[in-house]
Length: 130
Image (tube, rainbow, N blue to C red; front, top):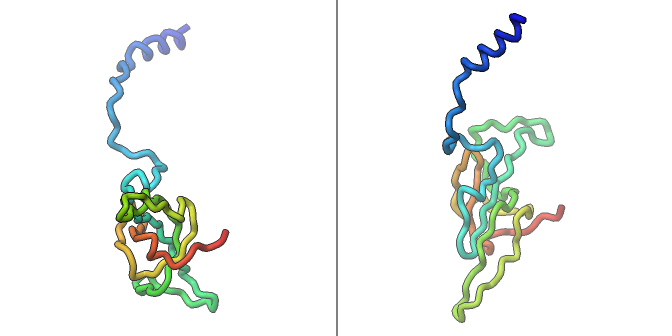
């Protein structure tokens, strides 16, 4: 009997739920394309992290600057380039393509600790087969 009375008292003592307001915290999984969308013939590429250990067993430190070609995944694409006649040339790349890019092209930005590059479609060296 006492147990039921205690449960009733606790139910009464609980504060009423606050009205739901817009939360400032971000959901755990958000796509990078929600933060920025490329314009014209530009694409957004998430650069894959380089191997930290070489095939020979050498460990590459974080302070070593990596140059050369990078592999990445296309996260978002623009609508395409408009030519002089006003027609839009559609993009050949699509979201999810694995591409090879030079480390010197495009603009590098960091979005929520993800290394991302914005570059033109013509600056892509090639599409990697899956």
